[in-house]
Image 1 (cartoon, rainbow, N blue to C red):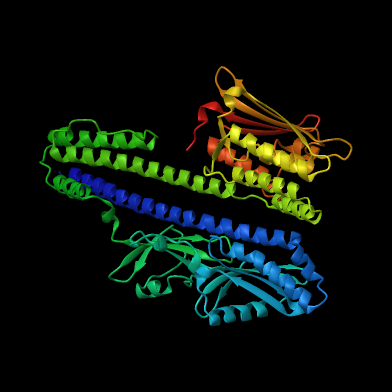
Image 2 (cartoon, rainbow, N blue to C red):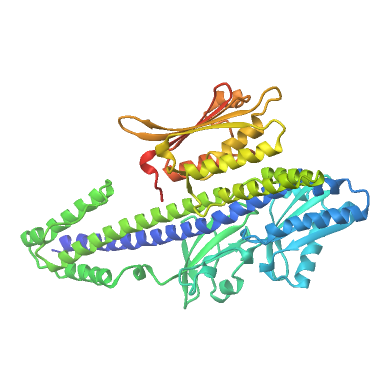
Length: 557
């Protein structure tokens, strides 16, 4: 009897411990996903800020003029113009952006533009300005990338870019970043804490100290810390810049808190019933071992990939019936957690897709403004009015309410407006021929998926000795198994670089800072159609782009 009961108790104890351990790991994994969810927009916005500033240093006329300003007054005017350009970016909703600055040590000029969200005092601004002035005395400061700066009352991430004698300063404030504790009315879910590489807290310092929470690196993925009254589960993840770490601290009251009342009661009943099983091999085999064997078989089925496996036998002992119900509920709960994780992934992809959607380069709009300025100098007021109306129509077509999809009819309207603008701006304007299957005018496609390539043709397809001709054809491609809408954009220009086409179907490097619009179209097609959409590049007496969109996925989530 003892020989049989002891192994049974051991199995039940191991099963319960394993269940609690799995629950802890699942909670830790979910908390780690939360860190990633809040990290993504911060990193993307920091990269966007760096790219925007680098692009401005290379192309902004005031910055270029500041390098060669002859006197203080000329440099002062340039700094004012640059600071005005910075205001719109600082006042946007970029994660954590506290300030942007321009500095010309040669003229002893520094202008900083601060975010209104930070509510910085005069002393805080002065302390930050003084540190930045000392930092720029080091000629190599711009090579360090993002650097951590801890001052009296605030902690910042600072990056400095240099072009000849001009410095651009970018400042990120941790207190402005979106965190779980800012979004929830009651922070029961947890807190996101940023620390230095030595695990010294940069945010939530008072909370960490009051609750005696130890922040440290853990190879186990998570650990428990806190005061005697309050315990917290802690997971950590390295931040991509400046050696910073991120800790997610969530209240922890033991793994049992993640079980409902029925599961806790069932755990007690199974252990208690096992201790009082009547003696008798036959009875035990019939009433205990056989149900256990069925349970193990079901667990093995789940382990082999049969996620829908359940215990379906009708046991004679009430306790095992409860085990069956609880186990099946646990399986259903695990499946529900997987679905929730998948939905979170879809939400993240949607956020990423919306971020890609708003990355629109300003070059075309700047050229239109220059042309309007030239027309004003020549007093061509009728042309100015016509061009402004066309430009407003074009902008309206870009900023659609739907961030993902647009009908082919609306997209073609935007193309026609764009071509009309080009015909007003160029001495030898491009010509565009459009052929659309009448049944496809209302078919939905990713926003800007056609006009982006038209812009690319106008920018790179022009040849001095002939007029640029662009052809757009939208048709159906139907086979026995699949149906696609094929969008073909063809021009008579020099075509794509032959080296890129020889090595890959994609002639543009996704890590390049050029061709952002085309790269974004490719990424959005991948996100919207789950890898079933196709984008092909080739040369056929010019550049040829083919977009294949599944017809059965015209409506996507």
